[in-house]
Image (tube, rainbow, N blue to C red):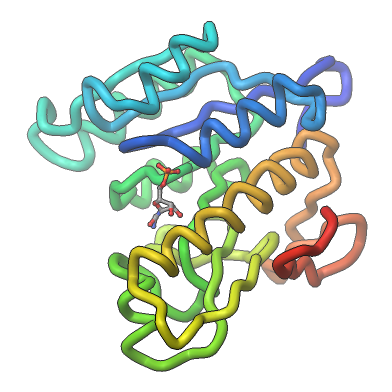
Length: 221
Ligand code: GAR
């Protein structure tokens, strides 16, 4: 929960690549739609297109090449120390393609959020769009959730649904899902900044006291 005495809650966003979700969140903060500050963008590589874009916006950037560390624990320790320098209220994983150690997840428990390109609990892991097409589901989408030590698992804050079309390829479906990601992740960031998201003792998420936050195409957010 953001400290009400602080004017603007702070996010640190973690990326691994292009960072289009990160850009959507930054733009929501810049436009005033989201009353938060992106204090830093940290990548799991020394250089990425997303880092270059964030730097061009005047945001602190750090490229932490995971290949420079002997194992997951040492990388996650360095990552946690880097994050702590920016004192974030929330750490937002936005296409951060690393499995996190339980120690890292515990350190940021309740403040660590992820977006995954499927309607969890369906299709955790990689190649979610190909998995959706292979199973013949008629709807697919994305999930914003609190992070637990289990990969692509945790209390769900919001989901966005898109239709699967008969002519879809993994690429066309990914593009439709990504468009939905760019709607729901900034919206969730906004709710977090406003202190409207609550995790209950039985690990359910309430936004303004309501559990269901399901977005569909064309829905006005
Ligand atoms: C997004 O589709 C995001 O949901 C996914 O990676 C992509 C990153 O795109 N994340 C995962 O698969 C995590 N399990 P972006 O860098 O353009 O935001």
